[in-house]
Length: 138
Image 1 (cartoon, helix red, strand yellow):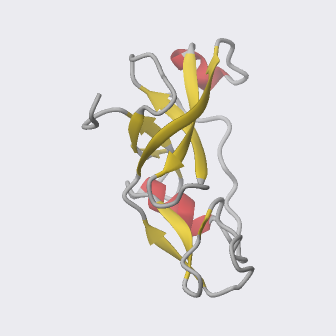
Image 2 (cartoon, rainbow, N blue to C red):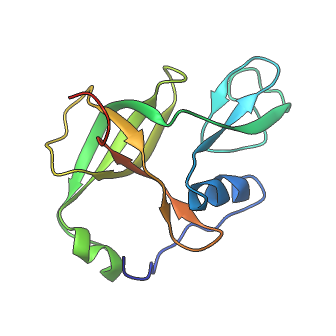
């Protein structure tokens, strides 16, 4: 992969999320009081509005809810992937949590397609989220 020109800028609420992706796993904010999963990472639960939260590892599986196909890259580092698909995926952990990421597959995307996370390392402290159909039922 070419060097990334556009990179996420971690803040106090997201630094552990980006680090987990760099380490090859996916974590999501989980409320210790009501059990609600919240994404993107933030200090307040989107379920009960409490602050008793932790980043917990998730299975990293879900279903495609929506997608777009990018035919024109806005940055030179993504030109090698054009055309590429950005998919919005509903996590299996909870029905109302949708997480975007680049779709890695030469299959045509369809709503309801089962996918799994495939984190990509950008730097030692920064990862990016991608989705793949590898190891998933057709």
